[in-house]
Image 1: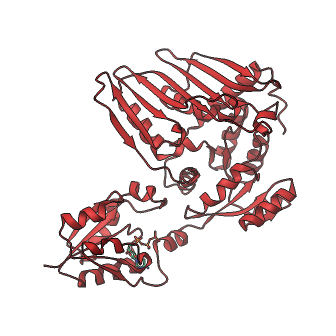
Image 2 (image 1 turned 120 degrees about the vertical axis):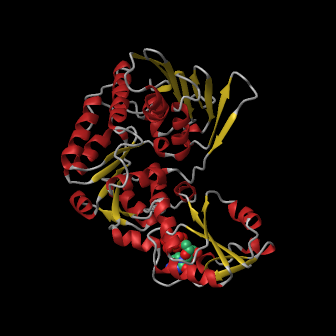
Image 3 (image 1 turned 135 degrees about the vertical axis):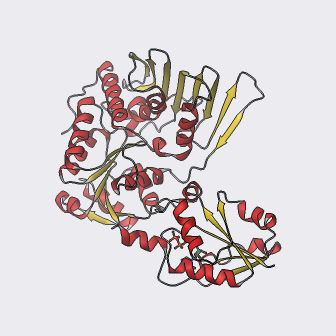
Length: 451
Ligand code: CTP
């Protein structure tokens, strides 16, 4: 008996899939189809699969060509399956031509001509209009945004706005997107806005965008004042628009896994969290020179507070700060301590002091540790009293990681994902509240933000 195997996502099952399976079957007597899990697809950058695994399997089976369906969960699996199932022919569409030649040592490899003018991507785009995203700001973060948005199907970078029209024009030229000189034109050309301007302008732009009925993804810290965060979320609700604060860690798959394990009871009750993030900045950077809104805490505080609020909640009893300041008075290194009824947390961040950035979550029966850069979580360990007993977890983190938050932003807008699943409104408001308390303690004016 000649055994044939093929693999695919088979999302929104279409004629191309049908014809591929039909021809695959004729290459032998027994056809096995590997259908990818959503998690595996996410790790290889396919972020917007619509049909559930069950539906995709059902659709593959319904063709009547398939003798056995298996699940594909990891990159090295094909090679193992070929040996396990004693496969004679591996086949896949011609869009993969050459990429599986390495399997020729183990079986025959056949690339079947792809059916023209149809793909799941095309159907996903037809089903839902592409979300046109406009960018406000042209700094470092905005530069990282464009290559990432291009990886998320269902979204496109429409254009850019920056009151400094020269920077906007250069940015638009570099990335081949529209440059809008007039704000009204910008708002009327986009469905959603990504705010990547300096901290103190976030409030104004988020408000404006929501008033123009746009969905908003705003870089962290969204605002530096509690009442303003609350006001923006109320406005978003009134307008029926999605407002996300973009702390990329919150949306990254490895961090999600870490939170799940920390909450699962595997380390008992959480009693202490330590989170540290430091980086050395150029002495002429905005972060070290903007004496009103710069410094280590406004820059990095959102990251280190995130695991604390996620795992211990936002109802702490008190927070205290200590800082080391540079000559201009800006904090180069800040430590904030949160006291809860039954636990505590210490978060530290530095721009002018370098330390080992790690996340440590201590529980009553064990602890979790993730080393730097834990804010782009790819690896962590669970330790217990018995030092031999260490569980190791890893997860992929691709590119700059913005693709994960963009994908969640899009799914939430399209209603296919539960609202607020990764960073809640309450957490965002609490982050703004701590920022406000910190700035007040530093004697910096919180009220005078540009409106
Ligand atoms: N396929 C095909 N003809 C098409 C589309 C897909 O022969 N028009 C084949 C692929 O080459 C692959 C299998 O069908 O062998 C499953 O492909 P999959 O990636 O699930 O489908 P796509 O439509 O290519 O999906 P996407 O647009 O998400 O990449």
